[in-house]
Length: 269
Ligand code: GDP
Ligand code: K
Ligand code: MG
Image (tube, rainbow, N blue to C red):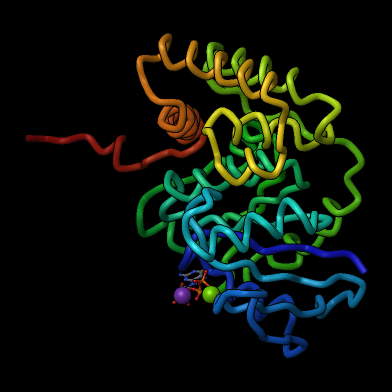
């Protein structure tokens, strides 16, 4: 049995997609220890795949119960693939989670949902370009209008067979060099596919990851030195360096792949 997880912001269309993928083969319960709904079901078209609906989240920080559940699942249960439902009408905000899902190192497919709404917004998304920039497959769908859903199914099944890890989108050079140095400190302690996740979390001084890795005092001190140096260079705190790096990259990607047709309207005034 292969596991495919659905992740996305609240209201991105996860439930609509989940219901279509699973038909009536669903079970609903709670995640252990919290009153966050846990829904899973077999893929209707191929019962070798189990679809796990994750709670709607904006981030993989450890602040809300929904974030904790999703993050624990993605990092500890290691699903065979993750489908990231992105609301195409709110692409900038949704891609913030996409970058974090990529950081977990799991095979990822972006389902760009609500493409039926783009016409009204007079926007067009170049899916090939967005996919190229992110380095992951992107399928444009409408969960509500049942558009391109079989194509999405194919893409997610293909992703469960992925053998290689993908290359991560690169942030600012100065940040990347700090992340490389932190990665060197934890090479051999965490698996290669998780290096980036742990390097970023250590850079953010994530308390959960610090406890989980339980590094030697010497290593922790080396890592703290790297972080402090970066904070001096950027004149900013480490967690906001990461937040800004993600938003910078997203705005570049959106500029390159989203066409706002209202930009071309000639004003006669
Ligand atoms: P969730 O919070 O991610 O589970 O999102 P839901 O599946 O509950 O969907 C949120 C709202 O968006 C509902 O009103 C859906 O009918 C609507 N919705 C979902 N997918 C689409 C879509 O492809 N196009 C449009 N126009 N609306 C959609
Ligand atoms: K909802
Ligand atoms: Mg829902």
